[in-house]
Image 1 (tube, rainbow, N blue to C red):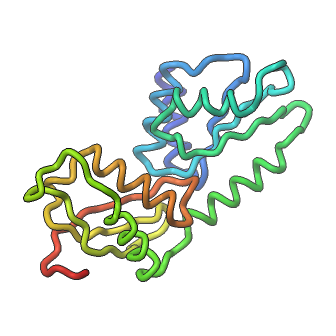
Image 2 (image 1 turned 135 degrees about the horizontal axis):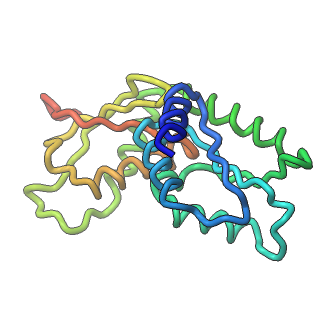
Image 3 (image 1 turned 180 degrees about the vertical axis):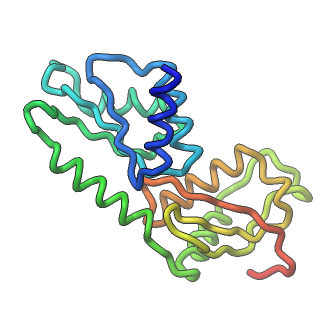
Length: 195
């Protein structure tokens, strides 16, 4: 198990897009969750591929996809593909989806588009933080691709808690053309307030 995991992790590091294969008849295991964590930590685009789908009867694909979303929350943005490799069903569309994720990971958004989304994010009500210590984002820019890497200039990086960071990442991914891939969001103290 140790050596197979080492090989899998090496493959994940080298991959442009990870096809995370599951047998439709089996539940998500502890090892699967650890691999999902590893994929997330490497910011790899990923497709959850449910194989042997032709052997499952009476379960809607939406219900199955919801199961994977709840079992693997770190890669909940990953699309789910239902295939039958032996019967060669939906294999081509899964490969096309992998190409689409590869392209998404290499997109670069204009600074104006990113800052427009940041303005929309700033209009969202903030709960739980005292006004004096409220996290504030002034502006941002994209500095890299594969994975898309954004730098946000803020009042104080230290007050962006894990919850706030997850919310910001999710919001940016959903409102920018990175819906199905992970993004890297870094926080930097702004030297002057730009609005």
